[in-house]
Image (cartoon, rainbow, N blue to C red):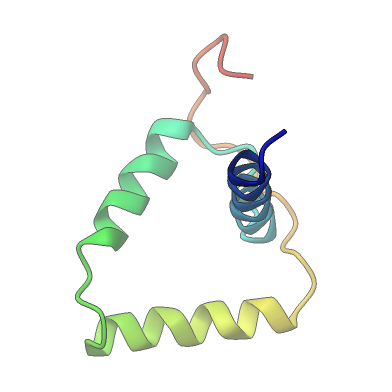
Length: 79
């Protein structure tokens, strides 16, 4: 495995860990992607960006959230 592939695999693992930490491991993937697209539109340095970053920093200090009961059925075949 090349260094670039190892770096990419590690990044994906870390990002997956964030999803688990947020208690969203059972969430519908379209819902997750939609939420991330909305977050990508938040202007860096804005009040909303700082508010969300502060929530995230606090969440990293706590144990993982328990997975919520899924509200939307996942599309078969995604797991």
